[in-house]
Figure 1 (spheres, chains in turn cyan, red):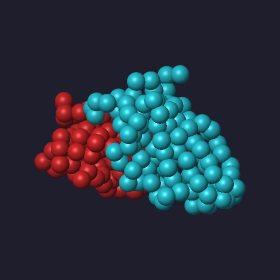
Figure 2 (cartoon, rainbow over the protein chains, first blue to last red; figure 1 turned 90 degrees about the horizontal axis):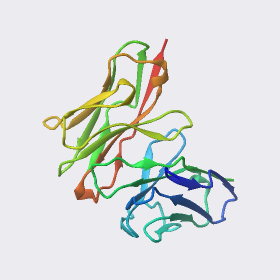
Figure 3 (cartoon, rainbow over the protein chains, first blue to last red; figure 1 turned 60 degrees about the horizontal axis):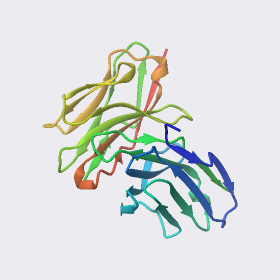
Figure 4 (cartoon, rainbow over the protein chains, first blue to last red; figure 1 turned 180 degrees about the horizontal axis):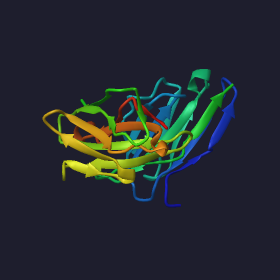
Length: 114
Length: 114
C-alpha cells in the first residue's frame, strides 16, 4: 500500500498479557517513529529508528516496552505484562531520511487493557 | 535540546472569524517545523511545513503559518474559520541535533461555534 499500515487496528487484552503491535512503513522511508496517545492527550514519543538502529529510546515508559525493526522496514512494538495504564492509541510514523520532509502517520492501534 | 510550546490548550472562535493558534519552539539548529491536524477519531494529517525556504508557508484548507526566527515562533492562522476546522492541532519541531526526532507540542483544541 501507499501509506503507513498498522496492525491490529484494535486490540483488547487482559492485564498481564503480552502484546505485539506492528507497523509497516512507506517503502524506502528510513526513519520510523512510535508515539502513544492517551485519551484526550497529546502525542508521547516512545522510540525512533533510523534504519534498523534506535538512536533514541528515551521515551519508552518502562522495561516492559521494547521495539525492533528488521530489514529497515517493518517494526514491532512489544509490551510485556500489560497494565491498565498502557491503554492508549499507539501511532507509528515513517519519514524519508531528509529532515525537511514530513512524517506520514498510520491510523494507529487502539490498545485496551482490561 | 528541541522543544515546542503551544501557548493555548483550547481556542474557541465563531464561524467566519480569524483563527490564531500559537506555537513557540526551541532549537539549537535550523529547525524544520510542521503543523498537523487531528479530527475526532481520525489520523494525523499534515497542514503545512517550514523547511528553511519561504518564511510564510501556505497549507491546506486556507491555513498558513509564518516562521519568525527572532521570536522563535511558528503561529498558525486562518482568515475565516469554518465549522469543519474544529479539531486538535499539533505544532512539531525537528532538527538534526535531535537525530531528526519529531517533537510534538501538547496540542491546541480548536472549537468553532456557529
